[in-house]
Structures are given as structure tokens and as C-alpha cells.
Image (tube, rainbow, N blue to C red):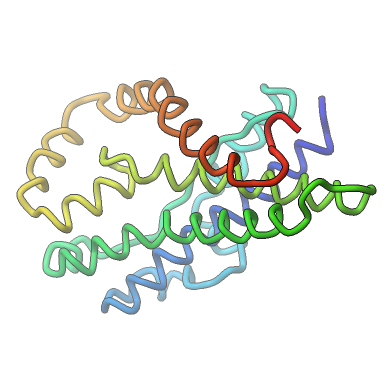
Length: 214
């Protein structure tokens, strides 16, 4: 068990999920839906988000970290949104849905700038910074790419249904099929590596020092 990597992954995931959900909540508030605001979700404090979704933000990440020997993790959370508001204001709802992945893209961009700035790290301190920034880059690119897949209940579906209201009904039918969420999850696990790694490798090639190959 790589305990150091386990802790780094867990803390990075908690921060990344918190920023993701806080962005959803903030843009919902700006768009006129105060549901998440009243639930205390417009905050970068992870505790309210953990209290709302303890399984997705603590139990599942720790379980997957333990089973993988501290090498990979998985987690989720969600901000409460007024469905009627989303129906009445589809474009605002689409922007709210996009806010989460965009927040992860911003964290990934910050990590990229840090990695670009330090270049080929020399010394323990620089290596520690490189490792932290690499973890933030990897996890946040993964969260952004994964959540932009246009399949419910992911944010991509919220963006599509907001911009193309005609897609609402097909998504509702899909979600109404028994065990559809399980089937979708299994399929996504198979698909995400083919979407994520090309994006991550394209970003990695822009860096002076490869995060994957050294």
C-alpha cells in the first residue's frame, strides 16, 4: 500500500469535487436557483459537501483507494438543483451544468502552469510540488472529460438538454429504464480511458517534462 500516494489522491479528489460542486451551486444561484445556496453548497469548505454526500466523497474514494493499493480512486457528489427552475430556464441550467467541468478545467490549468514553470524538477521540494501538481492535473482532466460525456446523470447530459430541449424526453426515457444507471456506469468505465488518455497525453506533450514518462 502506497500510503503517501493514497493520501495525496484522496485530498486532491476531495478538493476537486468540492470546487466542482461549489461551481454548480454558485452558477445556479447566479441563474436564480437558490436551492443549493440554502443547502450551504456555495462554499469551498468541503464539509457541507461531504455531509450531503458522505458515500460519494469519503466511503467510495477510500474503498477504491484501498482496493487499488493507493493507486487510483473514484468519487462523486451532487449539488441540489430545482428541477422546475432548470426546466423553465434551460440555458441557465446548461451553464450551471457546464460550471462543474469548467471548474475542474481551471484547476487543471493551474496545475499545468505550475508544472510548466518548474520544468525538470531538481531537489525534494520541487519534486514534491511536481507530484502534487501532476495529481491535480490528472484528476481534474479526468473529472472534466468524464463529466462532459452527454449521458445522464453526467453534466454533459445537462448541457445538451439545456441547449437542445428536444433531448429532455429521450434522457428521461433512458433514466426510467430499470438498472439503466448500472449499465451506463459499466459502459462508461470501459469508454473513459479512450476519451481521457488522448486528452491527457495531448496536454502532457505541451510540458517541458513529461508527467507520464519522465
